[in-house]
Amino acid sequence: MNKEETITKLKEIIKPYINNVEAFENLTEATDFIVDLNINSANLIDIMLDLEDAFVIDIENQDMEKMLDVKAALEIIEIKLANK
Image (cartoon, helix red, strand yellow):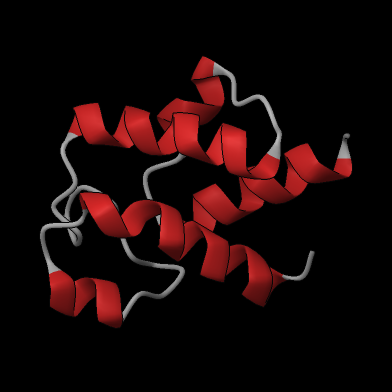
């Protein structure tokens, strides 16, 4: 899976949880889930669980704590997929 496919899949997963449509439409690797997209912390956990299911990976708590923006999410997903 290439980066563009991963980003597309990530966007599909986070779309139901966003509260800032403009920021979502202009999503970049620097987009912060909480600050830019106004996703609350409870929904962030739901997103992590959805990511685990969608990519068939396990995300540990320490990884979840780091996964606050798109870039960190992509890096963790990439690492987990490479280690499968």
